[in-house]
Structure formats: structure tokens, C-alpha cells
Image (spheres, rainbow, N blue to C red):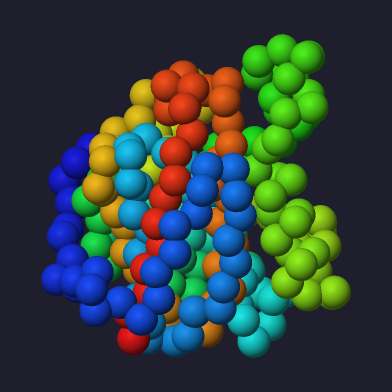
Length: 214
């Protein structure tokens, strides 16, 4: 499923903002309407778990089910409109050199670590911990109730004919990116996945980079 590869014409040296998110860290920032937002997979096969909120009304946030219904497809790639719970178009993917991104698998948690890997993994850091740190530091009115549907950029989660999710080997590579234009002011929250137990990233979480253009 690599038919939607689309390269961007934007140059990193012209970006108005750039930041490298270390493996296991979180990052949160407002993106204005019309700005272009890129997530760059620096080392390859790193999952960038991402939440989006309408910056003018954070109760209006990214919806996986509405996004899938709007585009009639399970995987996200060039042309996908990222829809909110209230039908707002938050962003649109305009370039993608990976090919597809998951929005079904959800974010790892300490509980899922015990189910997928082993009971003694319960203490290990997970994306839901990073999301909670992000929303609580951003605004006193946001808490764990605001950690809902997310996108797993660069993660490969095929759906089997039986309807099950298969966490397969990644299809990303060093230097691949996804780029989107904000259709309204949005807040982006990324948990750069700290997962040390998943063979998809060779048990080696790595940094990702975010860039913004006016």
C-alpha cells in the first residue's frame, strides 16, 4: 500500500519552527490555520502517537471514526481529512512519503503493556502517561478525559480478514515524513512512543522531528 506517496516542495530551512522530540518525550503546541505541519521519522519505524484538538474549543477533538467515515478508508495518507467529533475538518494530509498511518490501534498504556508483553512490564513508561503529562501541563481544564482517539503516525497496523488488528513490521524508513495543513487553529500533542517491548521498532525507540511553515 505505497500508492499515495507524495513529496513536499517545502524546504526545512524555510520553516518557522523546528523541534526534535526525543524518544519517550511528549510535545504540545498550537498550530494556526493555514500553517503546514510536518512530522519527520528521523531513524525509521518510530511511532509518533498524536492527538489533535480544535484550539478554539478543545472539547472538539480528533475522531478516528469520523475520519474513517469521511474518507471511506481505514488508513491515513495523502488527501485524508482529519475530522473532529463535531464534524470540523482539523487538518488535511498534503504530503506523505511513508504511505499510510494507523488510527485504530490506540496508544500504549501500562495496562496494555502487561497484556501484550508481560506482567512485569507494568511499571514501564507508555504513551498514555505522556499524553496525561501533556494535557495537564497545557491547561487546568484538561485531564485524562481529554485523552481519546489518537493517530499512530508511521505505525503499520493491518486489519486481517477476520477483523483483527495485526501490529506488523513498520513500512517507514529514515527521513520519511507526513505533512498536513491546518484547516483551523489546532493544538497538537505528540507522545513519541517510549515502547521498548515492540519488535516493530526493533526494541529501539528513536527521536522524531516536527517542523512548521507559515
